[in-house]
Picture 1 (cartoon, rainbow, N blue to C red):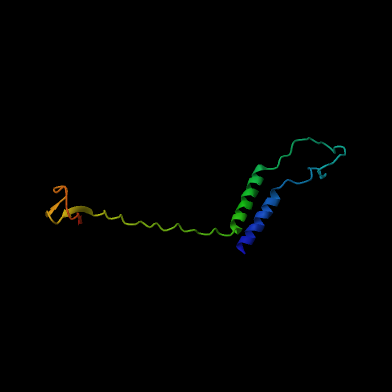
Picture 2 (cartoon, rainbow, N blue to C red):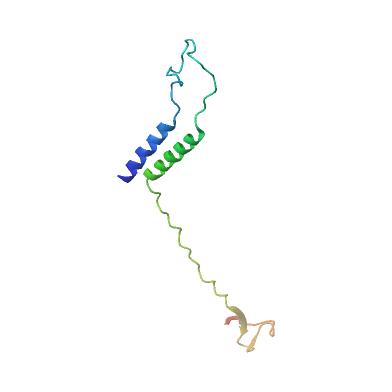
Length: 116
């Protein structure tokens, strides 16, 4: 009800701010007869304040009756833990009971050993 009242009030203010279709002597917009009495032709301009107030009232009414905008939540930020560093590998030769590069050759093949 409050929004409807505001919209009607805004429309009435806007209509009241529009210029009239008759000149000060009661003639219509296009009157081709002789001037009556003392008649000065000054350009009649509509009141700029009335146009501004009418625009503000109409804009306020449109904002008041507009449906609310949907609320969009930002996506959750997931931070993964940093990857653990890969284990370092040492190469062991069982026949010599030593590691590479202390032993340059291993006849039965090297065995990888993880070093943390």
